Length: 185
Image: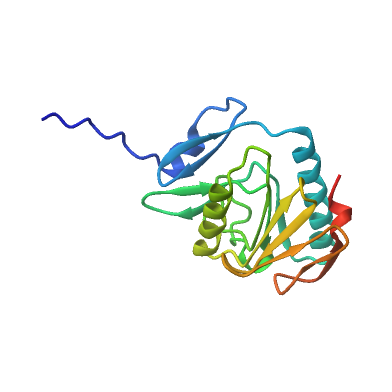
């Protein structure tokens, strides 16, 4: 009985070397996953979150805020590379060589994921689990449809914040406070 040949798994380095074709890709257990472009609401919300976060991080010299195209290596052999909608890396964790030209070699301290109507709940939960397994300390899941921010302290410790609530950075972004409604379009 013939056994079909298995396709070789892709590495983070091979993903980085792919030619730009205007799609966003992630690598999940060595398999290339093409992400569809997002809608307008998603794009506006992502910029709002990154803008508010960047202003606070810069004013307080806390580290770096990365945009939606930025890859983070969450696992090796097989490789997992995720690109959250926004992310924060604490100053103490930035390599002495500076901001990497390729993917960050570790998970962000804070990952922000904005859900789209096409996102499946299980896929989002898988991403959140991968972030925490790789060392992420806090995840914000922003759901525009319900105008809610889900604050994950672990995959199983989650708090839902409505638009009238205040989002904080907890021990990851000390002193950060922002009304949820300020982030929503």
